[in-house]
Image (tube, rainbow, N blue to C red):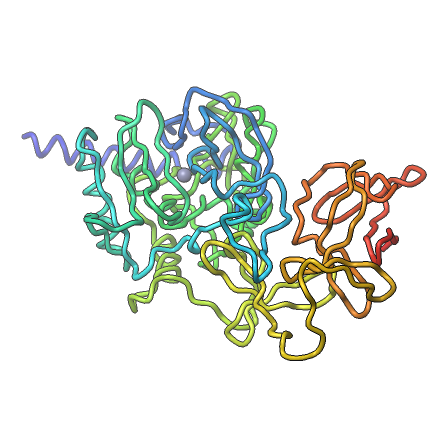
Amino acid sequence: MKSNTRSLLIMVCATMLFLSCKDEEVINPAAPSGKEDVSASLEVAYPEQRGIVKKGFYLGNEVTYEEINGDYILEGDMILNKKFLTENLDDLILDSNETAHSFGVRSVGLTGGRWPNNTVYYSIASNLPNQYRVTDAIAHWETNTNLKFVQRTNQQNYVYFRPVNQGCSADLGMKGGMQYVNLEINCSTGTVIHEIGHTVGLFHEQSRSDRDSYLRINWDYIQEGMAFNFYTYQEQHLSGADYTSALDYNSIMLYGSYAFSKYGQGYPTITKLDGSTYQSNREYLSQGDIAGLNVMYPGDNGGGDQYVNGNYYTLYGLRVYRHDDKWWYWVQAENKWKEVEYVNGAWRYVDQGDNGGGNQYQNGTNYTIHGVTVFRDQDRWWYLTNINGANTYISIDDVNGKWVWNVNGNIYKHNTYYNVDGWQVLRYNGKWWRLYYGSWNEVDYVNGKWEYV
Ligand SMILES: [Zn+2]
């Protein structure tokens, strides 16, 4: 009797689902479906709170994020590591003789965001309620992907599943050291599967670069100040890739139709192109999810990052080019590629080894070269000039017989004015600008004086 009732119920539900799906697609595309849970499918770190929307650079990429309770939140439930957030883009590369620790914010250390050897180490807080949510989610991941989840013993990099009062959230990618999956009591097993997706490096599905071919974003229905949650990863200047050829409406990483809706039912923030809403999946990894993960974490246990010559990558905050199995960085001021390497938590120029012969310059000595008096110190060239009223040594380079200000050896803040050598200049987007008769002109400091570029 009982089982009869149950199968009847299942039949009725299945029929209703089928019918209402048809209704949505055929009759009135924009109409509310009447059966979707408006709120439950949205993972957010702090559901009841709105923070301060800020802009900054995360690992060298410009991002808009929200500051709530001292956490930096991206797209509602991804926590950014403060260590990798900076106000400006400059100064990510050290000269070969500089040490990383002396520059604090300049050193960024994410190890590429992938878990090496397809292995995620984890531990679960002993006071986390309903721990089956985590163990079931992990079992689902292990069954469907090449990833292994291993209880941590003394590994340095691991995920800690812990209880929080509100919200479901996770760090994005492997960040090094301990990182979190934060779970309030209402986060389901499916939500834990979603959050683990962030842990292993997945963005939200609607962040795909080609999502406009599949989804319509109703910007007017999005809660005030929350629009940035709907940008593609490219619009957010995050380094990423679309690992499958098409958006998967069934992805566990896809926001529901009503995510961050200002007005709730009837006002979906995301629909299909025909205006219809969709049922978001928060139960299992979709076929598309699994296909993408197989690209990110191939089954050969390689894991980690595979770099292909001829491709650009954003690594540890720097846009670098892979060539000849080495890393290269385009130095705008010198108009050339320079080899760089990542050592001890920072990028640095590879010493070009030009010390073999030629002039040997003594540190602590003034020289006149190319008609300019320059000072040798720390095996580098310095030029004495006046910045904001103070005599200041700036690091300069000899580029094709011209002395060019080596900005990488100095720290200048983005969107900040400096008075240099009698000119008021603005540091913006890694370049110098001068306002002249109402328009901004790019300028550069060459041979001890300003030039228009
Ligand atoms: Zn999420």
